[in-house]
Length: 172
Image (cartoon, rainbow, N blue to C red; front, side, top):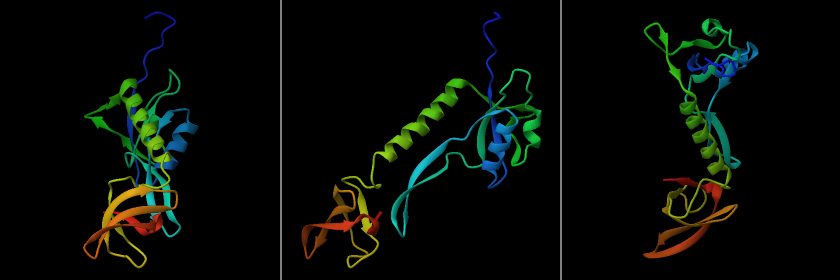
């Protein structure tokens, strides 16, 4: 191998203990490992209205690779918060850079798509009104504004556009 090319370092799939993913990531980074924990941004309806919340894309899994050429994967297994590595027999499963780049790109595109919206509704979505005087009625979103959603409801045998606060609406 030419002196100017370094060997390709594979990514390993790390299994974290339940609810210990953040601890595992922090401890692995402190040891000099390169760690990637892909996140998803999702909408959550709270009392204050629709808010964005991040959660792990693959619960209990993260991706890790050695940060230095001489570094071993052995200490990963005894890191606080880590259960072990995904393995096939005694051989740890690996991912190449292209696969990890695709996962990273997917997470970034998903986060950007959620960030563009003020709340999770789009024209044409089927929704249900969850609060207020029209609670329990279903309809189709016809327009979206920052704080209100206009819904086409069937009232007294006719289609009627009704503007409702976004916090009162849930996806059907």
